[in-house]
Image 1 (cartoon, rainbow, N blue to C red):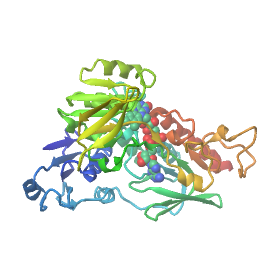
Image 2: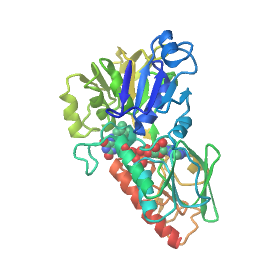
Image 3: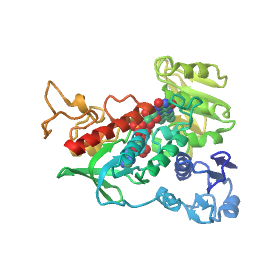
Length: 423
Ligand SMILES: Cc1cc2nc3c(=O)[nH]c(=O)nc-3n(C[C@H](O)[C@H](O)[C@H](O)COP(=O)(O)OP(=O)(O)OC[C@H]3O[C@@H](n4cnc5c(N)ncnc54)[C@H](O)[C@@H]3O)c2cc1C
């Protein structure tokens, strides 16, 4: 079985692997989000594994094997190895930056475009691929200027190119894990030990997908269970039953994206109706797509299968009635949560859910936040540490939309200028 992405482009990478391989899924997802055309060759027997991938059998730990256009073969590669092979892995060029941005979703990419184009030495650090949550969306339909919609991966790739053109440095497959503030500078420590020193910083790390909270969930990740809309997987679900969990726009979009190929799509929602949580245009499309069913007041309670997902057990929240669906495809689009423990460690004010509190929201009963050292209020989008800003979904009170994340990224840069000029 062979599948191609991105359609119509010559594949730059061939991935050969066994079905239900979490590593192969991570590679497909990474390449898809990075807009790199690839070919997925699913091996289904020991003989195929020997003949096509040059390994001993289907369970060989050297799978998946990636073969690049120049003939380079890498067995079971890490995302960092792939990034290096694509020529995207680089070390920071400067010992100090005007602006360090963490997270290359819409907010971070926008901040990078504005920061670099306005003359700031700018570095953008991303732990995975560019695009963030938006990069996982098959089609963003409400983004200004694209009347027919645009895929998240395409939007992200355009923004990456634009940021590059203005001279922003982009460090991919690098995760910020810890921060420090001293002498008016921020020091960001990356997971691989790299240190980034900057006079100002923007946290645009967005949110990570929330888990379903069912037993042995991790076991099925990438082997039948996927978080987000699974844009890289759409072509693989042909004639199969797909389950999407979630009542928000991202779940609705995912259901409609799978419907043309899948035999059936079950959209599992906690509430009574889609009306409260979904945009009207999506509701209308869902109810007029014959092979999409909405299972209201229902939750996933159990996942079944040895090496990969075989069955999903659902339970009605009122009647307790259980129903088992045979499916290898479960997509959880149930929102996200911010990962801002690093901020707590350095005393940055967060709300109860972990979102970073900024600007006017930091003023309580007319008082500035504790330990605020300056004789001015925090700027809009500035956190409780001067010079450290937050933009997009990670920010307390943010709107959770692409356009607003992009707007906040641009706006944060305006305050960065003010901070660098006046303190
Ligand atoms: C499937 C789906 C469909 C959607 N469709 C729409 C739509 O049609 N219209 C719309 O307006 N909105 C849509 N949204 C919402 C929109 O995508 C988000 O509001 C937007 O992406 C938020 O942007 P952001 O930059 O704030 O954060 P994110 O997009 O979450 O990006 C954050 C980035 O930070 C990175 N990161 C996290 N931690 C670290 C770290 N420690 N170090 C380095 N990098 C880190 C992440 O890997 C990620 O790339 C959709 C969301 C999803 C999931």
